[in-house]
Length: 76
Image (cartoon, rainbow, N blue to C red; front, side, top):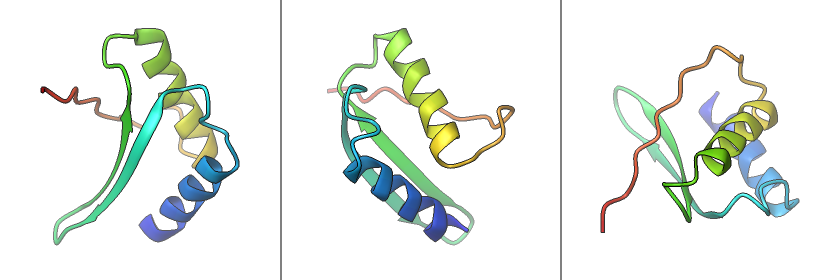
């Protein structure tokens, strides 16, 4: 299932669906116990942008509204 989600995410990025949401990178990490899709964005302080990105991601990947997602700010 993660490969299908990954494919939908990449197609959405190429189509420009996340164009105004500060996305600057994506990563798929396939691990033994879990698979992780990470989306990097330009600003961890803009709550409106983060919420918009989260909602758009759920919509694009057809995830339920109750799906819990983690946001982890990158420390430089």
